[in-house]
Structures are given as C-alpha cells and as structure tokens.
Amino acid sequence: MKRLSTLAAGVLIGAAAFQYSSVVSGQSDGWITLVDSTRMGDWDEVGKANWAMKDGVLVADKLDGKDLAYLVSKNSYKDFQIRAEFWVSDDANSGIFIRCEQPKSIGGKTCYEVNIFDQRPDPSYGTGAIVDVAKVDPMPKAGGKWNTYEITAQGPHFVVVLNGQKTVDAEDSKHSSGAIALQYGQGVVKFRKVQIKPL
Image 1 (cartoon, rainbow, N blue to C red):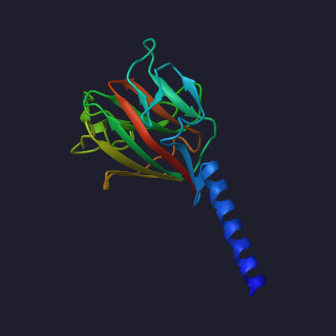
Image 2 (tube, rainbow, N blue to C red):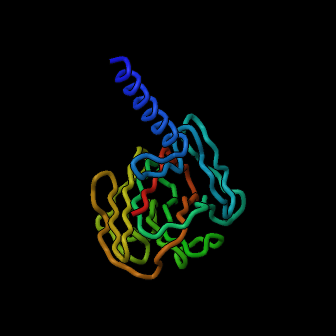
C-alpha cells in the first residue's frame, strides 16, 4: 500500500511539473502564448510606438514618428489558429497581420491584414475583413469594448471570427507562411492575450 502511495505521489508530482513547465514556456494544449497579463512577449519592432504593459494589458496610444508601428513575431508560421483579446478606442487603427513574408517590411503587399479599423474610409475592408482579400458587410464595430478574434489559416483557406460571428470565410494563395504582427496606427490599442496554435 505504501509503495502504491509513493508511486501515485510520484505520478502527481510528475504531472504537476509537466503542467508547470508548459505554463512557464507559454504552451498549453499546443497553444503558444505570445502576450498575456504577465508579459509583453518577445517581439521585433518595425516602426516605433509606445508599447508598454499597464495593469496586465499590452497598450499603445502614440506613434514615435509618422510610420505605422508593428510588433513582429520572431517565428514564422504556415498553418495556424490565433486567439486574440483586444480593446480599441473608436478611432483606433490596428490589425493582426499574418503570414508576413518580409518581417522587416510589414504591410498589405507582404502580409494578410486582419483589420481592426472601425472608421476606415472604405468600411468594406474595415474591422473583421482581410484587406484586399475578403470584405465584410455590414462591418462590425469593435471600439470601446473587449473583443475576441479567432483567425484560422490553413493552406489557402482563411476563417475569421469576431466575438463569435464569422466575418471571413475565403481563399487566397498570395502568402503561404511568415511572421505575425500586431499593428499600432492610431487611437488606443490594447491586447490582453494573444495565442497561436500551429496546425
């Protein structure tokens, strides 16, 4: 009986150690945590904004210069799911760029842009759209509240879900893999959690 108890204790300790190591490395069930309430994460910067951790949230509200700013992942991803929790002001211009083939030159020509831009002059490619790939009609609004993006890229197939509502189900094959990037353009932009799961 004592031997069984010792064995059970060993299994529990081993499981706890595995769980702890998964949390520390930012991975759980295949999900890799890039941003959460404890850390900004490890990104390369393209352009310059005042990104900072405040009250458990990654925030930017000012550009340092005229160029748009991006936090760019150090790793490249091909097929994946992204879960991102974000808050933006009504006038914010932001987005999540995916499959960025040139990580030092982020933009609509080198990446897919899953947009966060309620006041975009052409709302068909505003919040919920993939710019120049998949339009939204009507465009949902994200300003002034916490939102959740779920983005799936598998081969040429893209699905975007904003707050439980599918906004994109489209195919395009311009970019097959690359970095992901968080954009700051204007307004107030906050990311509370960003996770990616390679498929």
